[in-house]
Image (cartoon, helix red, strand yellow):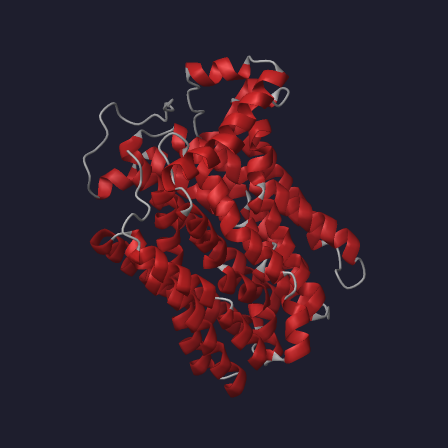
Length: 440
């Protein structure tokens, strides 16, 4: 694995607070911000804009399918990994050229989107949103590779943590920030501001250093297209699955079924959360303060508890409480549906829901990591994470139809029920004596 010359001192500082202020760690924080910013702008924040524009909930929920760009990014990852961008690659290097291209594309697409009224030009608006999602997923592909290549194995933990904090800060800006700006001004101004915020990633990419390409990768880039395609199929498609079932056998089917169901209830509710808050009478500023600002600190608490639990009990034992939290905390929305625009009830619901997201989300990442083989770490994790979001995104696309047919109270019962299979499967997996262990 090549390590970039980031200008750090020859001997990295020992673990301590200075250890987390190394240049490469700070670079990943700001690039993580760039990666996290577009996601709410094509998901939860976008649904609030569409709700304000007067679109019905069945139409709004179909925008959850934009998430398929993230679910299938492994399909075009080999192209990103092996294709040079004319001129830019020679100036910036392979990774930074792709980062700049994706970031500029996102910035321009968000700016164009800010000038399109979804109520009158929904088809054009949809095409632009698809472009933002595709470019954002492409940025993720490059950034994942960049993060791995700039640090050795000991640095991957601090780099991953730095990425998560940057990503979540961007979710706050793209959620609470955009909602507050839209409430004070307009959605057009909000999305223009978010386009400007993408400048954080552009500046970081221009200032950071290109990772060193190792000899094995250089050899792959010189292969013919047919040879490279065959190698891609072997390494990225067949190899990871063959390796997984060789290690887990038929039990692997239960594991994969659990992975597919784990986040189902959370994803299905997420697309209609903001329309629900607006529907019962909350202002965008109230949503920004309670759900996005207060909520991010609650999620940090959930992450901290998850980190302690994973170390003490292991990720496999933690998936049972994680699955239970994902499903049962959705029932808290019943109280809010009954209470109406009560800020204190809202805060209570957000406390339960965001703690669950922080805890269960961290457990899910740790569990998926425990499933991967060291021989196929990147490709297997990409495939597992894609499976984990695919059925959620597919089902979320029909959330609006279900809500319009049964109302909010029954919808929340339906969402909670979607989590029952994950709970059952988590119990089976946690009791399996030969459960998944990260191969050595």
